[in-house]
Length: 383
Image (cartoon, rainbow, N blue to C red; front, side):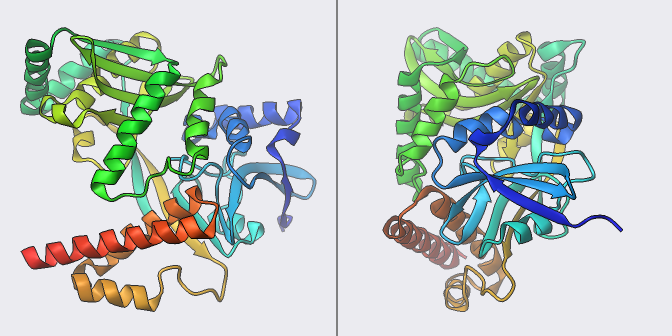
């Protein structure tokens, strides 16, 4: 009979040299944990900034079987730095770590919310992370030739868009690996304007999320880092992207472009050039995250399972109650109600993670509900 799981809750700053080495060794041994979000550096930097953060150390008897950095927001338990954390799970020896249910039970929150869980689980919405692998032999050129053959019309269109941008605005120049805090502020301003236009919650309004991106970019280690890529045409900034990287993995994170230049696809061109230049620097896998934009299918050829879930403490009602569910069914009809429930739940998880005051959470939730209902009525009227 296996020994029961137990947990100790500690501060990240209490990690010893040996424990940090153990964390790194477990991460290096498991390809599923290759994302920069699983690096001990990410957890330690986030712990100094994200409010109410801590680390769970799981044991079977006297043996440590995993580390899980997390944060609390009221009664909710979330991965550390959520919503600024695309992948999460227990870092430990493969096959021996607690699954999602045990992690939720031992951390004992009213809710355990994850949107990109990597590791064993028996519940939740299964999805797939999307990555591109650059071949060792031919590099970016071989990869691009294969993609262009498979999706000729799409990539020819991007080549024309680049030529058009150069003709209209001037020479197109891309730089990657920049640690320019002024450019980061410019990117954040573009993202905040995008959130206003689309009615999404502004994840940067709370302040600590902006501080986190600056702190990650300021960290300089051999194996982990964050940086900005920029595309300029005629000296003018057209697109920016903030990314994390560790080992051979490069994770595209926050893209932004000047909306008036959308016809030139500056964001797509920047990502393509980032891959080309990044491959020259030794990066072999470029991670586009999971779900979302249709353009990703043209770039990606590797998938990894991830899970989105909210695990409730037994006896607690759903976070999206019967009244809210009834409003969505009235506004959208039964067929779309579940999709809208999932959308509202994701928005609420982001709001709850960002905002540390009840008033700001209430304001964010009210805006999310109004936006969801407005979109539902618009779609219903159009159908």
